[in-house]
Image (cartoon, rainbow, N blue to C red):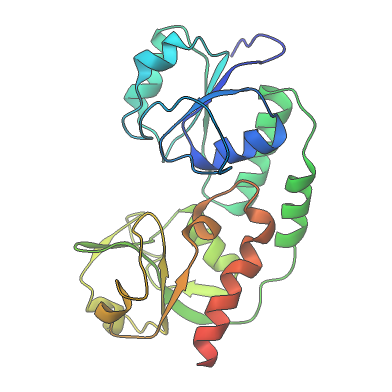
Length: 245
């Protein structure tokens, strides 16, 4: 991939990477998706969503680089931008360690900037041994119909690194569709209800689940930018509180 040096204009199609780039190379972002909500004060043009980016508007912005992700973005959109002569950096992140390695490579090889302190702090936080919880969990990401975290996902590795057992980790699908009654029959100790992508709340979610629940931060569970510095503790607090109740 031939990139101009230095890279001065970047379009991010991944919320986690938008936050990571904004915290590491301020000023290079020229556009992001509607779902890029961090940092909250980010003021750049929006190019629709992760699954339906306005690739013509992106091309018109003449970026030096577009950053994308295999799970978040569609291959057809990446191909359209590359066919238009735009360099696209595609990440593949399914584990915490892959997130650290991928971001280190993006900063060093893609953006030609030094590794940021927040990334070092995040690596230090996740280097701690996993707590010995041994709790069997299920994590819905949507309801009506219900989809849960399955195999080969970043969120699934986060659960493992927290000392939790994802009962759907052996699924053939990354986000299998399940009947909500299975959350009881699958010998689940605790159901974790994140506030994104589906916005579970105290009044929307726990009432439908036949076992104990804990409301957690979806950003802490699924984002792999600066939020990784505090995500471990941010997730463990409500989980431990629910288990102690």
